[in-house]
Amino acid sequence: LKQQQPGTRQAILMAVKNELIERSVHLIDSARLKSTWIDLGLINVINFMIVNRSFRSNEMNVVVDIGANTTGVAIFYKGDVWIRSFSQGGEAITQEVAAVLGVGVEEANKIKMQSPGDLEQAGTEHADSVREVIVNQLNAIAQEVERSIAFFKAEQVRKGMLQPGESIEEAKVFLIGGTAHMHGIDEFFSTQLGIKCVIPHLGSRITWKHEQVNIHVPNGDISRFSEDFIV
Image 1 (cartoon, rainbow, N blue to C red):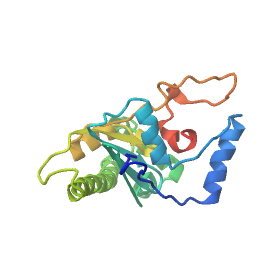
Image 2 (image 1 turned 45 degrees about the horizontal axis):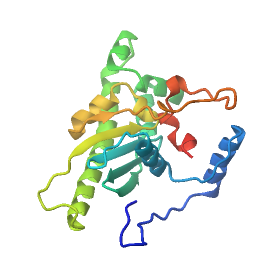
Image 3 (image 1 turned 135 degrees about the vertical axis):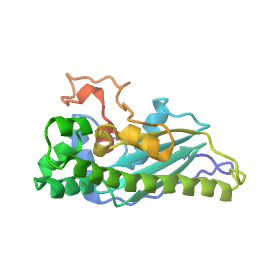
């Protein structure tokens, strides 16, 4: 967070359930590591990506964490950080797919992650209906993200950081969370938002010492585990 007057700095106050903190500490302890502090997941991701040189400071960067039941949006621009969350996520998509196909949640979740071509090749019944419910749910999430970006820009104008009508150079939208691994979701959000959306490989510059930490991370990518591992 950027400094205000000399000797002062902006701050974010957070309230978290004790069991969530204890779970994170236990996870780090079980890996025989020592945690020095625990922070909000989205704040951690932003800090990690700044260190990882994923952000350009003069551009607006958006992190969208699509979880099971909620989606978090964090916007970072010239030291300003704005965060919100809303009650919509991948679980709603899974439930819709399960209802259309009459299958269990586990099977519906597997189908949800497939590409449209995979659905047709597998002979998935009601493939068109499945695509429709997936698109509808993703559209709803994309619309909330778009509202978040519009609100943030309006706040920048209100605070005098931008002049009315002045544009912010938009960099990227970074999609993380389990639902972000749905096939083609980056292209879908890029089209809906009109901003390039990518799936970041948050662990690409981390050297894992497997002799000390016995954790399997597929392709070195911890993006789906951001809230657990970026501590």
